[in-house]
Amino acid sequence: MDLYRFEPASRIITPLGPAVTGTPLTGATNGGPGDRTYVVTRGLAPCTVAEIELHNDPDISRRVSLPNGHGGWGIAVSGSAVFVGTYPTANVHRWDLRSGAVTTFGRLGEEEFVFALTLGPAHRIYAGTYPGGKVYELDEATGTTRDLGSPLPSATYVRALAGDPDRRVIHIGTGCPARLLTLNPATNETQEIPIPELAGEDFVYSLAVTGDLVALGTEPGGLLIVTDHQHHVIETHERTIDAIAVDGHIVWCTGRPSGSLFRYDTATGQLDRVWTPLPGQETRSLTVDTDGVSGISGGGQSWRWSADSATVIDLGQRGLPAHVEPPQSLCTLGDEVLVGGNFGLCVHRPTDRSMRRYVVDGEPKAMVSTGDAAYLALYPGATICRCDADTQQISRVGKIGGLSNRPRDIAWSPDDDLVLIVTRNQYGHRGGALAVITPATGTIERYDDLLRDHALASLALRPSSPHSTDRTVIIGSETIADGLQSLGTNALLAGFDLAKRQLSWTWQPLDEVTQYTSLAWHRDLLYGVTRDGRLFAAAPETQQLVRLGQVDAEEPGRLVSVDDRLYLATEDAVLQIEADLSTSTILTGLASEWHNSPQLAADPTTGALYACGRAAQLQTNLP
Image (cartoon, rainbow, N blue to C red; front, top):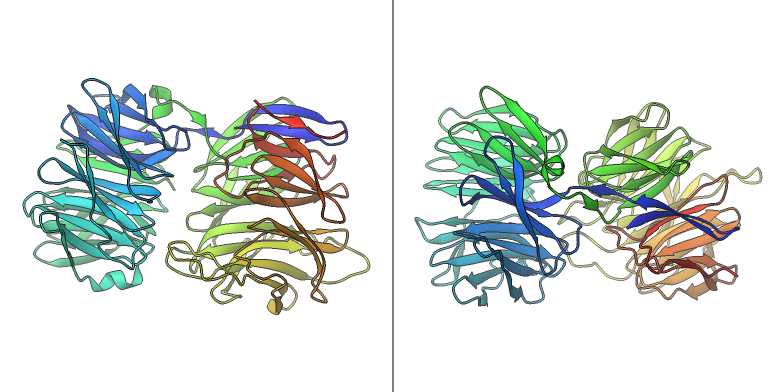
């Protein structure tokens, strides 16, 4: 998708080039013929599988496009074939490395993601899925699949799988809740391996099995748990153990958010932080050989550590195709426009149509300008970064902390010079938080679960007025929780007093609402849109609904008030909302695809709008 500047007054549409680009990867695996690694792109539809020659300097030797999918977390090599499990529909594809042909096993039931693939006995491949938390068996010889059901009915994720050829069982790591189980494919019997330390974790995120040793990594406690003839629980002080590789009595792993490589000696119990190849980056695969340890990062880099050297190579410079990603967020900063991507931020300068890219420690899900800087709220982990307009440098402010994981909305209060962020809690936990950041000091205050089990989805601040000293921030909730079923349809609005730092009131203005997607003050009224497209104008001080309306959009997004006009972004259009809540389409044909709700940004000095979309059908409907 491209970034566009649209001037409503003149109806001029200016293309500014690809909105956000990169070489992000989902799955990666080693073990192909010779010394080869296979990786799957992310955000490119359909996704691409690339073969990397690891001899000497890594190089992309060949690649193939899959029939469908935006990425593939699950990947495994069996003989001369590569298997990839994709999303947003759970398909498994087979790439024959001899003939180059790609075939498809078909969709795995109604599942959406294949998060793990592993090899089993008798030429079988096993797939772990979401949201059913199921295991599927794929017969490589016949091309058939078998639904083995949910090994843990309460889990929504099978996040990790590892075959055990000696015992002819499959080890299963689940999510929400985190458990370790074994599956006997011959009998379809599962057995849980009791590990008390998993009670406080949300995911068994990574797994490795060799001989008598089973190693697993968790999220969000960042535990490395190793069982052989003993039971080792190692605190890495990370959030997530991304990848594990075993070499005899040495267990190697990588941790996030630091991006570090660790070495754990099961004989001595010593854990060493060996190297941090790419600070903040996720690791997609890890392999160990006689000379050292190699890894593939989620940002599209290959790295290698040995006793004598440590190197990082950008695969984008070795033939991995850079591509346009689905954007995550959008905001203006002075005369520049920021677009958030996958572990990246692209900064556009419309005056000369230039763009520069930064690597950041996550996905910027929400951004706001404070005039001299932009504040970025990153997922996963709810880390806050600051992009300085003058120095063009990005610095880390801190983490919101607690259970906060997914930033949902952000705003700046110029009167108080405070940045406000609302969040959704970690996977498997309901609720969310309001974070209050003081830019002058960098301090972060957190107010957990203001609306009990509801996550906090949106917020709005009343513009400055000489007639009002009100310092109430309006918050919209959602009953959605990551990794859990929706709580209900009783989402709320609430007022939080910034002066007293306490909740003032709650209100349920509408029935059957799962999410207040966006809120905005406009002409002294609070406007809002729900996930199902209901528009409303309200006077929250008296808890009165003033007007109701409806927008015809599959996914309504962000409301923006600028230049005395109110706009709403949808996947396909920018709508202008009138006082009676009727709408007029001022820009259509965007055909956008967001990894968030559709976003819109405005230049506060000129009233120009910035949107992301595709050029083929873009047009203005203004008279």
